Amino acid sequence: MPNNYLIENESFTMIQKEVESIITSRGFQEATRSVYDIEENPLENALEDLDTYSLFGDKKVIIIKNLFLEKKEQDLERLLKYISHESENNLLFMIAEKVDSRLALSKRLMKNKNVTYIKKEVDLIKYIQEKLNTYKIDFASIRLLIEKCQEDITRIDSECEKLMIYKIDSKQITKEDIETLVVKKLKDSSEVLFSLTNALLERNKKKSLKIYQELEEYHLDINSIIGLLASQLKLISQIKVLKGEGLNNVEIQEKLKLKSLYQIKKLSEYTTYRLEEIGNMIHLLSDLDFKIKSGRMDVEHALILFIVSL
View 1 (tube, one colour):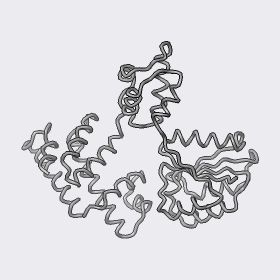
View 2 (cartoon, rainbow, N blue to C red):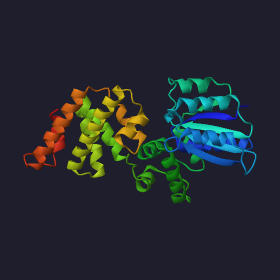
View 3 (tube, helix red, strand yellow):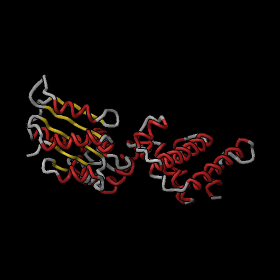
View 4 (cartoon, rainbow, N blue to C red):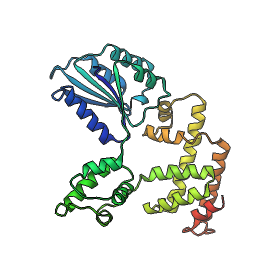
């Protein structure tokens, strides 16, 4: 059986459970463990670990996160070479929220006889039913719990624990219990701003208004929202130009001195728009900002009126 695993799952909690299950079944419970996140560490560090004898025992568990962010072809080839001549003392996990099957690396890993590819879709309803198997809970309550947790399985896990303690005597969980105990999880405000930026570029009024209503829950200042939208649009323009010059995400991150690769990846989704379209939207937001600051437009309804006028 191969000692190399490629695991795809949107839930880090589910990935952890799968990894632990494999470690136990393969007898690596006492092995030393090392985790390498390519967003923070180069792949070569993990490769050195794979090739180095452990001073603390014969067996090692190596976990590589975000492998597909690695751009050094030489190191990727070295990884594939290691997999072809794997060590029986190493258990290698390559974990990812999403594996793009179109990528050459993905294809080579999936076809490699020394790699076990695991992709599990999580049935959240079934997951909650199993988690609360000693409690009574109806489908409507389960759906409400999923909605309030924004389908975040880590959050669902935590809220289930709270609900079980809360209803330990009656062993029955109702919608009222969930309304009382579970606070609706807000998305990261930057995610909502990304969505609003895209909706504005699409000039989709209905979608923009809906996202703006969602954004109101974060109690952000209107001037801050306008400034953040304009900044994102400027970044999209810069990324589009740099991608046109042949730079990859890592090179763009270094060029623009951005802290996170995720920001580059997310904004890159919007580079399909023409520079002229992006520039026009920046100009419109700048004009809106001027009207607010000069008192020519009511702050409270400024962004709504702006969206309606698109």
